[in-house]
Image (tube, rainbow, N blue to C red; front, side, top):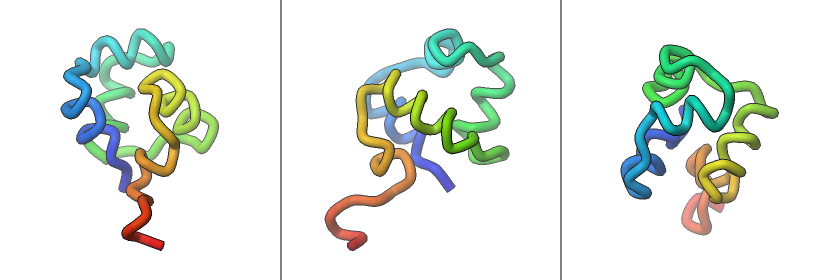
Length: 66
């Protein structure tokens, strides 16, 4: 499970914008956002880069989960 949806909402970013930035279709991006499909590790790092967050934030790891 990833937290892409929560990060998008917190930053006020639309899925269509993310899809354009990562070079994926809206339907593919929506599948990532809704956890119907998990992005590859490489794509997860790309999404983190585009959203300007640590990849750990996208997979739900923070200081409380150590």
